[in-house]
Image (cartoon, rainbow over the protein chains, first blue to last red):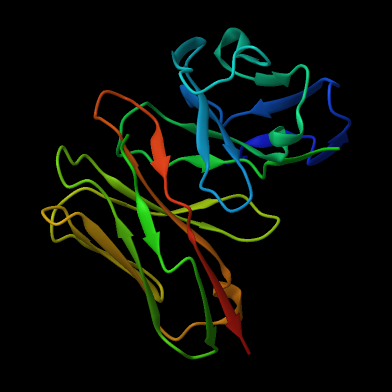
Length: 115
Length: 113
């Protein structure tokens, strides 16, 4: 079974620039998550999709972050404009359903550095 | 705000040592407790999903126990090996209605040969 694919692996941008991350979840997984992991902290949920609908985006800084999941498969996360504090690892994960007993399958993440 | 605490923050052991970490979570409205292992430059990998009080799960040299009444889970590694070096994360769902996992900060284990 193919894993969760993410790209790019690394990205360095200047503050106020824009950046986009891409995620392709496990085939058939209905639920997709984007997490932000800042150094020294645990992963923090940014947005949760169920198929192509948003379940939870309460912690997404909507003035600069946006995400979409077209056709309920691939997803993109965008930051515009980036700030220094956005430097983090951005993890995409998927699970078969939104149930609490399904383990997540994670991608390898995108390490973003904003300078 | 619901929170999950992990201790210690980091740990360094010698090859062959056995070790354990703690995950503390709110004991009210328990639904499930997840453990993940995250090796450097790799994807976080699911280790266990635990749902029943008193549950004990095992995967090779790694095992985990769960106490939902007092709100803690232990992760044990028997005979640590250098390949066990990773950050171990625990997480729990805020509620059963399909909400996402809340993660702790993790315990970073380093095993020297």
